[in-house]
Image (cartoon, rainbow, N blue to C red; front, side):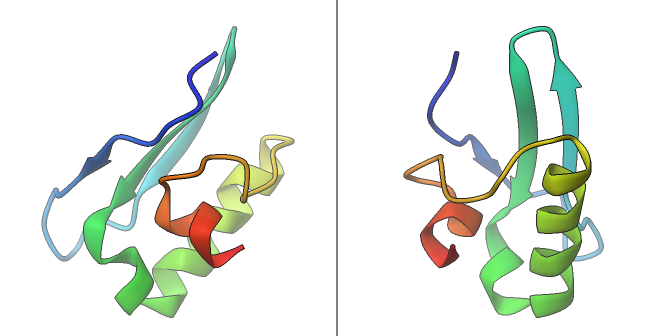
Length: 66
């Protein structure tokens, strides 16, 4: 299982994504998520809905905030 984040930038309108795979949860986290509280909250909710909890990936902005 991957324990690190791949941080990408799909532009200012992209709020991020999280999906469940056979081996866990894969999050696509926009670089600017820490500057946009609504995007951060949305991604945390997506992760929770998939049965995860933010704070486990050490280099993810969501994990650092949690």
